[in-house]
Image (tube, rainbow, N blue to C red; front, side, top):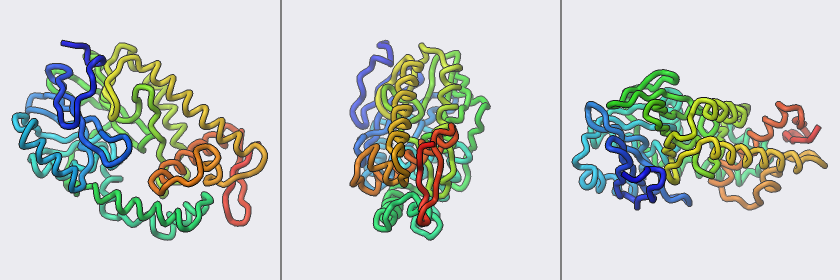
Length: 339
């Protein structure tokens, strides 16, 4: 069998056997990246599907074609969702009901997804709008982010009320594989990864991708979260614990080996961005929104702004923690300045 790390990416909905007990295919996404990787892992009861893609009407048409076509002969008894981002959890509820499958998910990520579904308007209410304004966004942009979140959550199907919580640092046995459940914060607050040390396999979700640095996330309701530092801590653990010949199956892009080199690229990307943030505030204090305009570009749409403002805030917290920057409040707005 061809080395899975050399396998070309499958087309949308095309099954690619990576190993006798691991199958890879891609589901479509209505966003620039265009796809999310879905993995099937065989166990004693059948198959476990890792991640569930989007769940809007177009995506559910895709999933119906898959379960009546290429997946018809797979006995899928569980949907394992790595984290609560819409491109990974969106179709999970529908798939669980359609297949009669269980939902497996980390507790914190499950609760985040449930809150998103039951309270999609939270970003539009006073507390979270005040936070966005405190970042220096104008009211129209802050309102646009709230509207984006409501629209995005139309792609989240209702999750089951009962699920199997995946507990970090515990084992998960799937067939002949004994995975260790790893917590991977930064991109999402409590993203789950699965590591089979003996089998040389890491299901890495979005934490580590080959040559691509996933954005860090700070939810509007948690403006003090130091997600960059949590992300760096996670990368330290992975670099220490995962061997370089381990096959890494990520949430997007292709399988690869050489996790140390991939982590090095991610570190350099984020370190450069942090230095750009510091350079932007070297001469005068700036709001986080002004930093975002300087480091990325002005005129981001609400979806781009939602992710970018959180990432700039993560860099700011990191620089303040290092003593290289500090927060100042002027005219009721928080600004960042170099020390």
